[in-house]
Length: 254
Image 1 (cartoon, rainbow, N blue to C red):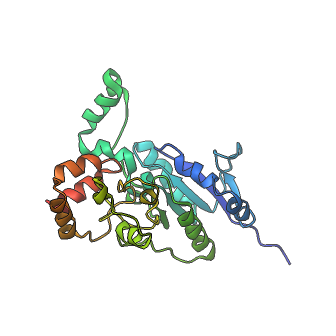
Image 2 (image 1 turned 90 degrees about the horizontal axis):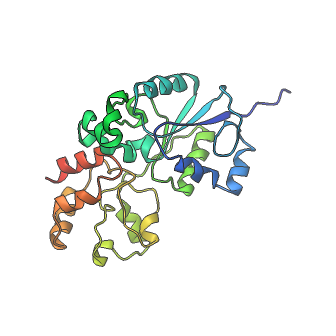
């Protein structure tokens, strides 16, 4: 009998820092197990070869130029399965900061007198341009979730991104609330799935996974009032990861 060929897996990056790909490369023994199941044909972090024949495409980075739009559409045409890897690909990430001002102003801030030479469009998550089959949120991605998504992908099963807040995971992990430590925290309205990773390690939640679909606006307002915080002050801290977080937060909580 003819041996069934393994699916070919490729990684592509757009506007990003490649931190999520580096995190993927840090899977350790799990990565070794993965290569028994797939052929990695394009992965700049760990290999120099780059093939154009692939079945599964992992996309890191947001779409920020017209060339990006054309390129991601070509990748989508080839790939049987497309995965958005990390905050930039999933929700536009840090690159979305520029969406809160005009493109001309953003280019002027970054490029100065060379701004007129730069071609740029608003920062978009991958799903705003092409169909995405799986999404792995986070900045960087949380390795246990990466493994869960890859398992679902290889078995042809859907992966349901949690639609409850990080606060739920924090409670299960018996963390002291960051508000009790005089720190603002977006865990109350941010989509879970990271096992409250940042809070477990003494940090706060910056909202890198995006908002849950129906954030508890009233509960969040009560928290802000209880701890004497203003919405404007909180937003200053939490427009880091994407424009849509700021805009959605504005709409939900004002």
